Image (cartoon, rainbow, N blue to C red; front, side):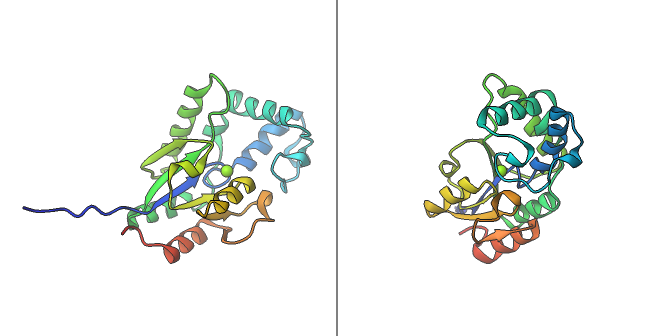
Length: 198
Ligand SMILES: [Mg+2]
């Protein structure tokens, strides 16, 4: 009898906004519409919460975000961060399991559209993945290595002992290594630190 040995693949937990999709670039265009100004009036260098654009509280942030998602199809219209397609495909071909993890279901009764925009975006950009998790508590999806940009998420995952690569942008300059400024660096860190399966 032929017995196939089951190998467990190393799971890469990949955040979307700010890691695969250029959230801040697209939000800058939409925010310029929202404020009726030119995008060049809004600094590219932002911190989490977008105070540099005049967003002063959580309600304002949520209003802008809701406008972006429901009226401008934010999740479908963000540009891809260069390298995401190429290096995720290489990781997948190397034998890692790509698990997309995103906290995008934060607008009540808008879930069908949020999910549809997300899968349309993933397919049209050729992003390979096996699993798609809409989760706020990212540590609960059980990935072996996380790629994440939001400072609090990186900190919380690392506090739980979970290996987390911080994908660099202006919101997370204060977060320590391991950091990756490009997808090529993400790929190299993963290849160095863990085998595709055991
Ligand atoms: Mg993110």
